[in-house]
Image (cartoon, rainbow, N blue to C red; front, side, top):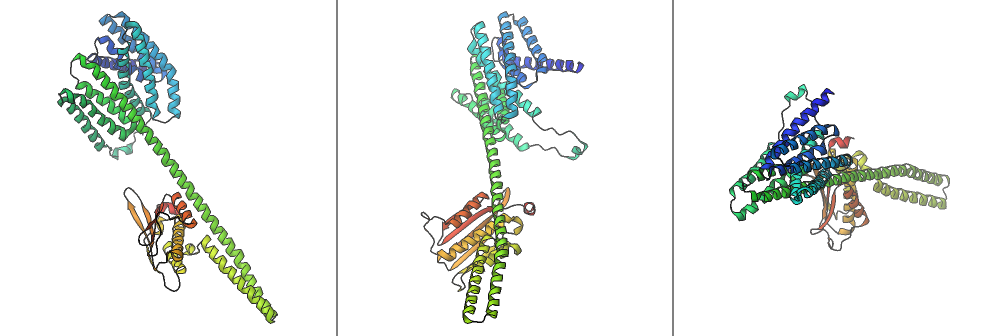
Length: 514
């Protein structure tokens, strides 16, 4: 009980001092002074009520009532006191109804919705305030302008402070932190302070009426910069500091105060909407990156499962068909020895030849399903062996191989994908290009701030192709789909012959060991 009382007293004094200071600032802009309560103190009340639990409200509301009573006693305007009390009651009821709704959305919705939802509640409270003052004094439009300006200037600042204090992960102090240096983002602070100082200097230096109307637009520069770097939090901070710059540089003429209020409201709404829009775009981009990463992992898993199935089928074919063909040839040789008649020997030779042909065909199928060279050789050696087996024996096609990609940066999926691309590309050159020279080059391409990527090029000096009407075959089309699934790209060009270019991302050595 004692702790709760101390908390309420602390809230009472802190809120009363803050509201009184904001009222004092408002009196420099609003005449009569009583209406200054409708400006920044109104925004402070809405911001605190929407961010704080119900148990903290008594001290806040008591401080508001005391401030109203003191001002009524000082300025002696009774209807204004009752109007302010009515506005206080209506805003409390609105906050009671809106707080569960806001809390529900804060727990379930994206972060970019928070400023918009609270802005909607602040706008509704400003409308209630305008309605009350329209009934009391007929100044509803002025009260609406004051409520919107104060609400959208101060209430978002309360949301920003609540987000910083309640949504951040705070690490407790430990003895080990003594030796940990404090990291300050001085470049960010310096860049924004320069923009802010430039805005203040520009507001002070420009005196011509034509240029003075243009000067407030320069305040949008810090808002855009902070929104781009920090989302809605940066936009709200820039909006608050820009409001300070506007009020500091505003001339003392009373007729200019309405323009100042409109400028404050306009730049507050601009900062709020711009920050929310950028935050929304960031969250969409983050979701898109997550979905792309999930799709690539799924595609890699599908490719891995496909290759595993190919390997198992190849192993089964090799064991079963190879053993069966060996038995057939053995039985044929036994028949030739047991029955030396010419007719029987001829049939046995035919059976042996057909069995050998079946074995050769199965061997080719096994090579397509799973290249045995990958089981025992590095990828570069396996590709070199594939080149020797694929090229014509009459040396009509000369090949050149440059392989500068270490196997440590390749997992099994990348290895078999690169091998199959090389196999398909070399097969197409041998069958269709009519070339006398084939160049195969694989190397790493460094990227700033990212892992290197693999650049594979297969080039020949053959007849080329029609780039406009060229349609890749089923083999290369399947390779293109697989490479796209792995996050790479495949491109065909005609450079005095066909050129196949493939880009694939690498993996870290730790990933290849898993």
